[in-house]
Every structure is written in structure tokens, then in C-alpha cells.
Figure 1 (cartoon, rainbow, N blue to C red):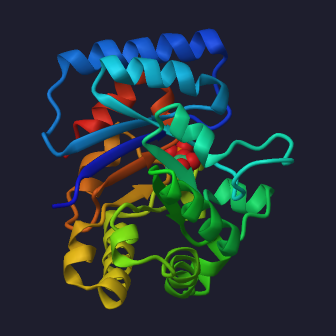
Figure 2 (figure 1 turned 30 degrees about the horizontal axis):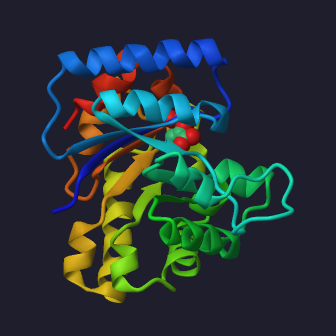
Length: 253
Ligand code: PEP
């Protein structure tokens, strides 16, 4: 059975000390809250704080994840971080193909596919982002766009490999804008994504795949988004930078 997942994407925020404080607050507050047994909370800080996050996660109820990974195994790739390095720091998850990486760092579906391969090789679960920009939605092309991203980025995997993947649908027009997809828009796209997975890998694999929503998800709208049958949680940006907001979202199932 698929998991409910709430993953915090800190992006390029927090100094070392601020990160320490936030991790400490999340850890302490998680002790006091009751989450559903099938709810997985994940914290994805910037690279320099991964070791600290991994240490906190050992003592707490959340898992640690990275925000990016190299598509190469090792060697002369200045500034890159490999999946082997993430594995050696006990990362359980890694975000791939976030719209900011696609837009600002030219991450294509082919690069996403190579990153996914690297992560799976090193036993890290990829959280693979997909989603359309505003002009594509206005042209009613959102389903074509998402289908292409998922097909090119993921459908080279075997069913067993695909079983490790988490998908995050993030309409780009809703990220960091305060504009959220309606619960109906989210459900419609999530059901579509699940149908693509079922077509490729069968119903059982599709039923086991966690599909997260991302885009201005906050305590005030998480409940109605997560109430949809195909919305299995959220990838949370801005609201993951405050422990209370983040945990309130995690309690919204
Ligand atoms: C994100 O960056 O993945 C995201 C969903 O951001 P926000 O929640 O701030 O819209």
C-alpha cells in the first residue's frame, strides 16, 4: 500500500545555525504529534546541511533527503554531488527534476532520467517532479506536458525499479506564487498520472505509487488537497521553513 508523504524542500534557504534550529524544532515537535502510521515526513535541506539532517533523522521520526544529485557517477565534475556521496551520508530520498532546476539549470527529461538511474543504483528513492507552466495550462496542454516528462524521465525503468519512485506533480504556476491548484485540478492530474503508470506497469504498481502535490501547499489548504483519493501528500517549499506549518501539513491526512 502506498505511503502518505510530506517532503519539505528548503531550497536555498537557512544558514547553518538556522538550519540546526529548525531541525531541532522539527525533531522536538515531532515527538509530541501523532502522525498516521503510514505517513512519512522527509526533510530536504541544502547540501551543506545533509550530514546534520541525517544525524537528526537518526534520532527522530523523519527521513533525510537531498534536493539534487549529479547525473554522473564520479570524477571531474566540479561542484557536483554524486549519488554515491548521498548514499554514504544515508540519504533515503532525493528530489529530481524540480521546475527551478529545469528552468534555471536546463535540466531536461534525459538528464532527469540519468539522475534517477544514479539514485536507484545507490539505493536512494527519487522524488521526481513534473508539471506544466502557466502558458501550457492556458493552452490546455498540461496532460501532454506531464505525460512527456514522465514517459521520458521514468518509463525506461523496470517495474521493480519504478516501485522506488515517488512522483511530485507541481504545476509551475503554483510554486511560490501563493496560487494553489484547486483540489479538483490536483485530483484530475494525479488520477491521470496514475493511469499512465497503470498503463505502463499495471494496476498494482500504480496503486502503490505515492503521487505528491506541490505548489503553495500550506496548513490552510493541505487537508482539502490531501482528501483526494489520488493525492498522497505534498512536496512543500515555503511552508516547510516553519516547523509548525510543516508539521501541521503532515497532520492533514
Ligand atoms: C516547491 O518548491 O517544491 C514548492 C512546492 O514550493 P512552494 O510550496 O513554496 O510553492
